[in-house]
Image 1 (cartoon, rainbow, N blue to C red):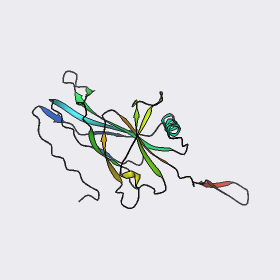
Image 2 (image 1 turned 90 degrees about the vertical axis):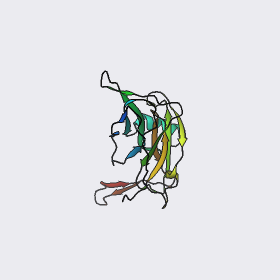
Image 3 (image 1 turned 120 degrees about the vertical axis):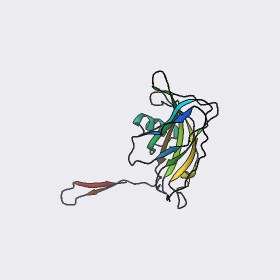
Image 4 (image 1 turned 30 degrees about the vertical axis):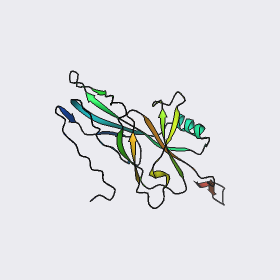
Length: 192
């Protein structure tokens, strides 16, 4: 039996519709999972869900820090999800536009969160918001109360193709400490 909440999904066959396994491209350490439930699509063909999870580029981190007016912001990861359909003529995967208003239900695994940090989850528009200044919209979830009742994951309704950024703001009382060797004044370590 899993040690975390389990999501059960009833999947009804749509004649002529098949689903490949989820393609999870994870470029972040530690490797925490993001799970997406298959959306209901009334179309035929071969489909798959693609989840891209990467580190937050410096440009985007700086834009976030400017947006929230707090330079202590640290980006943990960015994630996006989309549905693709295989083109039967070329066998190439092409992005599939979901019906208006259809969201991708998912679970984001964060692991244990530190209680002294203020965690934030933002959607960024446009989704490739690294060269142009994006518009950030704060999303809300269980991660905001990272106390003893937080299970290490939160549910979220993803908009296909939208870029989401998860990170935190350091508390105002964070100090940097340097430990120096008393004999020669060499730096031994830095703590934050």
